[in-house]
Image 1: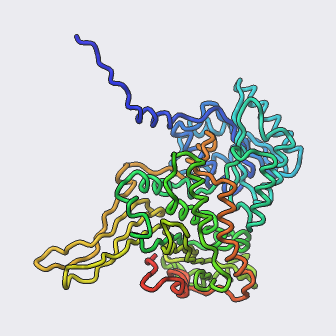
Image 2: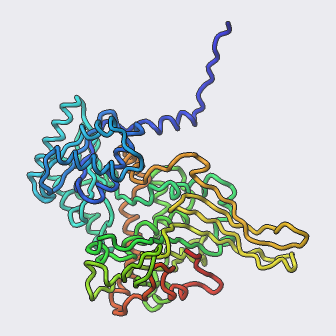
Length: 510
């Protein structure tokens, strides 16, 4: 019998395998561990990571909150959150192991005794597992606590240790104005190094957003077209059918511009418009994104109406259900002038994108849930087919929600004896191509935070560059006492959004 022949492993396959290795032994501390975000997103994400074997073998969870709970009650809430919000039916054995490793510290976020108790609990857990634990502090709290929590971590020796890495994940919103964001950056960087700070934007955890990088920089088909010579316009849309969902207290102080445009949608714009990085590494990619954001032309105050529209939903019907106007929602003040819809025309003043409009819009109570990017190419310079009918410019469409797919719209001949053209679509669906469900964004982001991989998190200068784009609009709207333009719930937004379009451009139907 001949000796078996062992083929050497493909280095790329080896790299893929290493990428799936779980993070190092860790303790994840969730400040706000019984809050809405933790229940709906973070705890279910931890379960799904455990189910797939992507948590460290030695992993411990600590919830910290001012809610007066015992450890058993916290574990019961964890299990209930997983049963209710997990994307898969939980396996009792996996869930039981996750629950058994969960602990709870009761106390106020500005109370020093909370951090003394937290420090003691972490040391106790390290003794139990017999080794140091990497520490990730996740700030899932109201934004006013971000600075105090980081400062308390520093005062109680929890911001860094010699024997294990320490990281701090900070949720959005990162400030409500440019000045607030700058001040918050200053406060936390007095305690932490930039490499320890993970400012989260869950849009960056979505597979389709990450795939924008792959499609742009790994395919010769797209990159030659990705410039002002071939691209006529770019549209970024994030539409929601839902209303406030009981969040009037937060949303009325935020509005559509702060809630989605300042963070999520400007991140998408930066990825679409950035130059190729020298390496697929966190700082290389974030540096290129910062260049794009700094190149976005500020909208002059006297031309604001040509570039920005705000709206607010009125009463209407969605899916056959009659819904109230924004002003009639519980918790909304009668004097509110908060926008539930925002549309912008931005320009990126670089060699690649000079003259190309980037249209951004987002709103609540629109006709359906949809998040997409549509890149419209320049029309052909000459159409040789007489009588073939109107030919629409080609479009490349990236759909992020509710289904993840990429489509290319082309003109093709209709079967028959005549030369008649009509648009057709080539469609690539993630679910069909990979026969798997994409993980939730928070699953990827939590894993990266545990590993110390900062690629999908924002840097200090990046956050402040985003605010520099939005702050002039907020300032103008803040001094304009006009109410937002009303649109009917279930529609595609206010009619006034058309005024920011260049001649010949049109919003895509939602």
